[in-house]
Image (cartoon, rainbow, N blue to C red; front, side, top):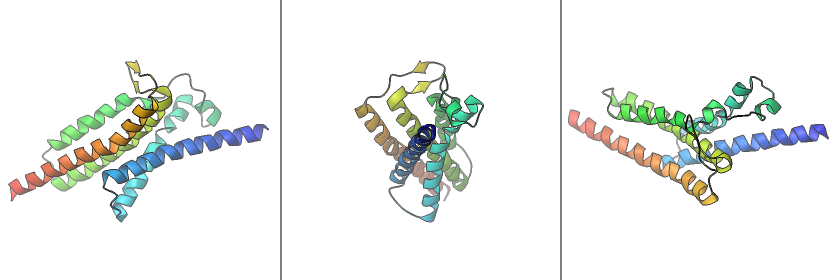
Length: 178
């Protein structure tokens, strides 16, 4: 019976982690307008992977690789603080005003936006049960179903808008140089 309970716990964790990853992957595909190229496929897999890896902090906070220890934390682990997304916003702004070559800047922006998408979708899914955690200020109440769905669906919309805006700025900067 103990083995069945342990198997059930492992399966719940695998399903939960896979759900995080799939939401991030599909969000990224929506951001890139469902265009499927080898590079976008690789980026989509990275988005999936990054979203799943957010939960590694459970093991770090527990100081153990045992699943039971990682699931019995008394507080939320560090990567689950939505405050950590603020540096992404700062990086996007700094990249927009950067004087780097457009190719290098575009690659950096893609990685910043991709990791933001992966982490934000993970946080929103967790917020459905626990709320968003803004260290050091505290947490919001758990998201209601409509707020969760609208928030999750808005991530690809908002991020693709930012991405298009960046491309417009990049193209106009290229035209100014010519």
